[in-house]
Length: 432
Ligand code: S3P
Image: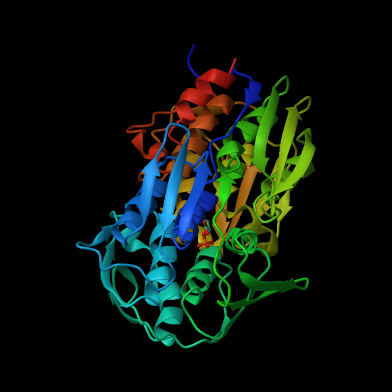
């Protein structure tokens, strides 16, 4: 039976390993002398590109049956790679590793696919230049990034204006080989996995926050300790099945071992406010990260919501799937302040708007605010979805088949491998 409006979602689901954590654990264990072990690493294309990059920079990584073993090198000890490093589609990979390289005495060219080659890098490299790295960008903004790191980085105080965990983490990785105290002020709404991981590796890091900002102080006076790390389930990937379950009364989905870090689960709060029946059970903390199981048992149709700009960083990657949810929720939904969505793997704001129109849903964009006119009538569907190989756009509009009279036409579905290679397998496993 095709995946269509007749389907509900049922079963017990283990989401794939978290992408943000998978990148970071590979990079950070790569800076620890000795053997670290990683379980449940997300083996998606983005993460594998980071793994390959770390190997090219001198780190030994061995794939075992159920884990990866990483034998790291000390901060400052990266070796000169023999060729340029290709990050494919991954903004996280290229930005974080630029930070790492910036304080090593090596010279590297970092490249990516056609989507990554159009994404802004200056937001990261302008900080790295200040500490002494020599960096060239295409048109002063885009990849390739040619970077010559410095072995003698200046410890600085950074203020990050764009709420971006990638900018922050790049600076934090540069600090691993900077003598003195590095201070960072950023928005407390961005994901804090780099901070949490460094703490569990015994690094000297202090983190404070007030209602708006987070203040980080790093001092590299302690060696990082080896770690055995099990990557928790990715809330951004689980968002597709959880949202699908909320869309269809009668669904019952149990989600196990999902990362429940507050910077990542804004969409759960959003779904609940819209009428999603989601219970969070068995909360526990492992290596500084909150992990939980969830029970989604949907009984009613959803209603609309308004999200303010401050809410957006907490659910930036889930706006595409929340747009589908909003289309089937009764009333006008407004997502305010979506500027960052225009510089993701695609211009997601525009693609959401164009594709909603194709499936028969009215939406308007006004000054980076998105208005979606929802109701729980079935949409016409049969739209030819334009995804520009953006994995989250594709997966969101595939889930839209659940609210359309006719199935949508999606050509070339291979880009799900970027973040969620088992997406279609999970859809057929948990839809009834
Ligand atoms: C990520 C941070 C976010 C997010 C991306 C992953 C990370 O990007 O959209 O998918 O792992 O640090 P920004 O930091 O650019 O907001």
